[in-house]
Image (tube, rainbow, N blue to C red):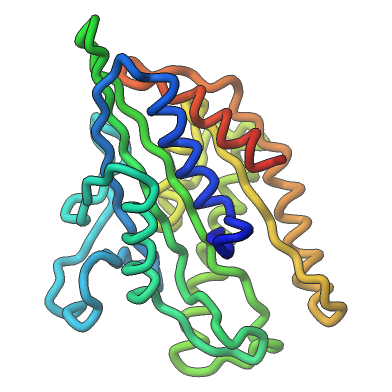
Length: 258
């Protein structure tokens, strides 16, 4: 998702394109942007902008649904002016992220990481204010306990990761089948992303597979997951009354694919 400076990943490319679009195509607008950075660790939301040594003293964070969609009251929101500001936040957040060592990965992410960019722009002529948000998500990879040989805390983390990814799969399956009930509330991850998986949003998913032969079973599972996700049709993105960022989302998607 991040990538090195000489070959930036999706996060860097999307953020650079977002700020470029704002500066070149919305010159008659005044913009304010802010970001939040969190991880979902063992089904709990952790604010990565706060020091982890104070975890026991921090209030519990829960997603809430309201007029502005899904929000997390109490989560640190930081104003940013450019892509470099966001990268500095990433660096700080990565230091606080939960990682661990397993037999399959020496630096295994033990959580899902979500960076959210909130953009608000006001047209200087019409005085109309529009809002939008962009999630950039690094999902922890599923793992087979028999192969990772995770024990203790690592084993518990793996179970929560696998369960949340399974819940995401259930949501994708329900969307693909046109089910009247979509089980968003089965996990923190899916509930947090509820308003980003409806027809008023655009979603792009990248599935990473390993070129190593011994990882073939995991790669097959990942590809099957991708096949299910590819069947989901959210329909054409609709512009909310306070959002005009459909064009940005589509450009990010097209650039990422290239």
